[in-house]
Image (cartoon, rainbow, N blue to C red; front, top):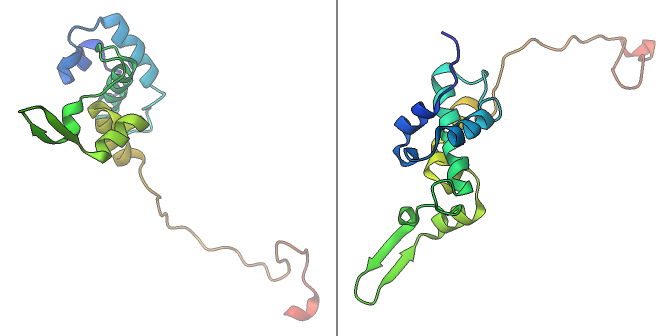
Length: 148
């Protein structure tokens, strides 16, 4: 089955917060994410969700949802009082929002999870040994004949 690029309808189904955003606007961000943030080196099942998550993240950061690039503050609330209002935010959530990056929106966090699954970490591959040529050390040229 070939990789299929997601459509604005797909993104709106996955992230209902974008239901009122025009298809043309969503398509611009999907086109940017397709090949830029996810390409066919990703697993086929993660490709479409990654493109959608990256596009939604970029739209949220750009203020397409009418939030002027801010993120949902309720995600970082650690304490709330009602009488003469007192709200405390998680320092980690505030740092993530200020810093930007994938952690600053829930859509970016979805993308980061998919990114880690597809591109995360070092890979260790088995391989053959290095051919040891006794007459050449690779750096200083041929070795003298008495080394044998």
